[in-house]
Image (cartoon, rainbow, N blue to C red; front, side, top):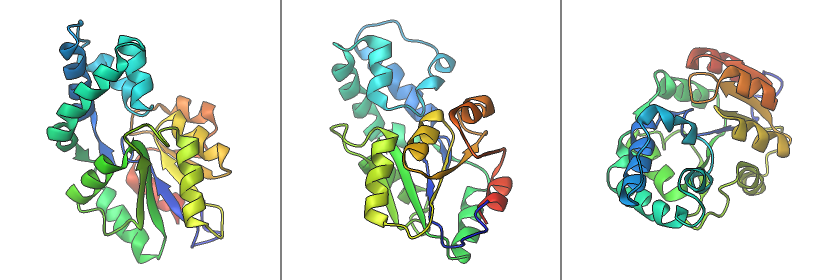
Length: 215
């Protein structure tokens, strides 16, 4: 896909693309809901929350009035242990190493607060591969993927059309709003149908396929 220009930068989503954050995100949401004294959904009823901006998900779960309290409780647990309840997807480190050997500029672009994204990237020793980790701020600034990517592109100022890699429709829509190519990964939390309907250029099933379309 990117063979026309080997210096085209690649932007990777974090949750559901580089790492599987299910245990930490869902566990922290359950903690927040329990903290409010509400009935706690089971784990599999909350996986839809992985990908969208967190505040919007909490508003859907507990209502706008209680969402700020839920967010504080969520961050209390997530900043302590939730961020560590995370796993690197198979083949990610090797794929990034091979892309780096080809001199591909790589960045992280996640709606997760940058303070947590930086911590996770360093924890998995992926910081050696990425020039910059772009994320939202704790006050919600740049939690929208289109806004985040617009900011990231203004900082990077790429000379060629960049590529976004992600697993949810929010990633696709953000990329499309910024005239980026988009490759979806089906091993994350969005289905191939979700990605294709949103306008993905390609959808791949694993990191080996992902590498092949990025070079």
